[in-house]
Length: 426
Image (cartoon, rainbow, N blue to C red):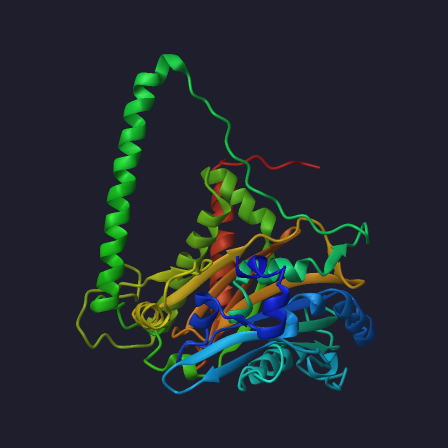
């Protein structure tokens, strides 16, 4: 991860600056200026002075959060590097004066975050800021909004760094723990060695074929394979539009119930819920539109047949030799698909941010040339579904949240009614 690679900066890099990694330069490429938004709901009002004191001792000491990006060279060859600078927290922590009796606090917070994204971060200082909103919403007593440029690190490492600023509520001295997937134990039996040998060959051949198939699909997407034009697919230039950010909190226990009933993984469940929710949402959107192309509709559905709707899975970017060509290629691939999805596993126990208990976590991104990003973030016994949308394409994102949540309820109830899971009776 990018952040982990730079925790120990050398004296030379401190004095002369450290060049941006290819991944960092990628996020500064023309028309691919990507930011991370991390919304945190709190169970208490936020004390700005306590937060500032905590950040001074933790986050500000990290090289990335105390470095600004400097650009030198000429118009033909621009060199970008990180240069250490003195951090004035007053320039990075914004605490607006808010009316505690505002009529629609949830809508206010959504509009506030959307307006924050209208302007880029100031390159004369480190590329991050924290907005403290002491206003009660339906899910929290106060809200904190981190805005961080994606060039400072990939999403997983930045979230991990923010979590390092927290402590367990039950033990203020202990760092939060995040579950790690256990490796399955070996079940190899020498008597079955013959069959294991052929199974290994078969799996290896499947891996080669699937890789070849994925490469062909990626090349086709870059060259000509575009998703079907649907009500949720953005037009060219969608990355320049102001985004709207909404979230919905659902039960992680319900998701695990479905996982156990279907003998699958949490990732498989959330992908299925996203697909089901999008199907319900598109059915609503198509119900009021005439089919101008004459395609046949599905039975009991307003969705036309033959739709191609794909998502890109947001993962960590690895180092590459250059950036301009890869950036153009990836941007073109993004432009030809409909949406992006990602997910991060969060702490299993309640945590506090400098003494402020956290109610929920809702990270997402904006800047890619797509109109919809869906992010899943687990925390204790909750799963937060975060949407980043272009409101000119998806004017009713809360309806999409409703459809994803309703899909979870339908699948959960079906699993219970069919007796696929056993419920504990108290």
